[in-house]
Image (tube, rainbow, N blue to C red):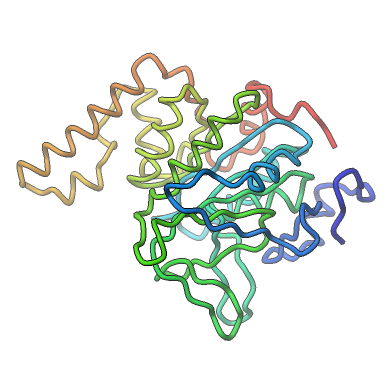
Length: 311
């Protein structure tokens, strides 16, 4: 059953909720629009629509948590940790959870999955009276799946995740597509405008876009960043940089591709130097939490002033 804001469900323990839910469904506890998920398309030269910001401000608490990263290199047990980690860590969250607005689906059943970082906001909106908001760039011409009626957003199986409350797709124009970081300027324009809100970026795994356009972009703005230790790739690279001043993992994937090409190696060195410059004097903004440790995640969020308003 969907509830309007201000309506409360019958009390249930977290164990009861986890045992009764359909993991692939994750319908939100509260509704922003009775029709379902609001979908906006925004030109890269346009301002974000007022309706998008209005959906954000429907949240009961002025707390914004953005989830960035990926699951590349994850084993099945790594994927299995994600939902319990965020559900336990964000117990009672009534702010805004933001990510990429897309998901993957089971081709046999046609049900949306919760096996990617971009699936976290709908998971949280299913367990808490929070608002799930998404932005993603149009990196490919869209197509409708005729069997399950999903909107395909790329060539790799991602589809629009209608379990969110509001999603905005950012496009260059009707003919030209953007890169994978193409929505970040617009996303951060919203983040910057919410100057009276508590804000934090949560980083899990991730590659170049996660590093440059999410984690370090957030740090450069003075935002706190929670990074999941043990989630691999650029997340663990940031942990190593903060804890040991070890930069060998940063841009490691680009360095491996560079081989012995001097020009490409120089480009990678420049990436690392830029990250070093941003992190200098900002290490205190990075909060390290073991991936899968829900108690530590919850404690860290509370230390940053989150989860102060309970359901």
